[in-house]
Length: 461
Image: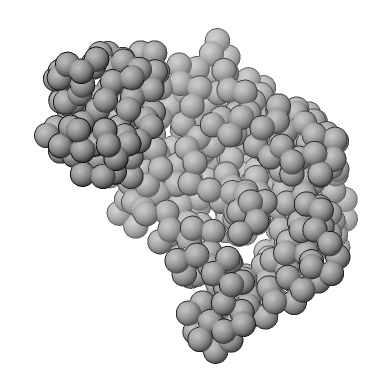
């Protein structure tokens, strides 16, 4: 599967109670969401011969890398090069240790059986909670939650220390289940702190900001990510916008939504129920999802240097497969059985019967949505921005959003190209440069400047 296509589908301190979904004056009745622990340690797998030497099955045992300063592993005493055999008496595996730590509440005692320089050791200590963002001189950081379908999702708010009222800003992340729980002021905009410099700039500019962790990510309950459908996910964002509006000091006349990549698809649907002053989107798709997929199969192959004739053939076969799976509701297995000649393409698009790591319910629901109908019913300002070097999305979608809005409310829709910015806000001059160096660029603030100027203009209007 094309990495770029995967990305668009990516492609985000005392606990407080979150407000109810649709009322500013009713608090949710639920316990504060516990903070999860973090080990602060990466591993490499133990070789088969090493595992056998220590009486472990193949795949068991890990070699510790340098622990992160101040995190659990360092405080327990684990060192780079330690062979980690067991955790709380059970053999460790690279495929499961992350889930084990995630399911362990902070403060719980951990016991590691290790070998250091041929000597067996037992190291013990409490699992430390993940470090919290301490905020800055300009804003405080509040860890809260919203509840959806009986499960609590971590929300992280920044709030200016100066008296309000303050404009509100809700961030909706892209497709991938990555955590946005990090220190904004020190973020660099790399893959681990995606969007961080932008969020810090908005928080420092005097906005109350909010972001929410997806189910099964960070502190959030729920998951797994693969099973979450589109309609289930949008409900979480509706709750989050309600919490932002219910936060004391938020100017309800100046609340903005910003959706990055797939986050742009949720924005108009949320605002159709709960009006906002403005919506900004970056790296968006606005036509039918089926159209977007076909464009992506064709265009990204060409950007990557594939021949026109090969691209044409891939587009033909891709269209056949996507029509049967996405439009007609057939399973990938059924398509392969009926059309054996398509089997290699089906396996490439739908490994394990999933599409980009999700069950097909998500994508079929997405394809059924008439996004034009949502954009057309809004009465707010809309900014649609495409990065000049963003090969993941297309100008046509961003222009379409502005055109839909302006047909109903002339002058409220705006389309802009952000120079020197790719899908991840990395500074590349061309789409080819971005594709060759994907996820390895440095942060470009061109969109940040466009966004801040636009919101200031809208608030003056």
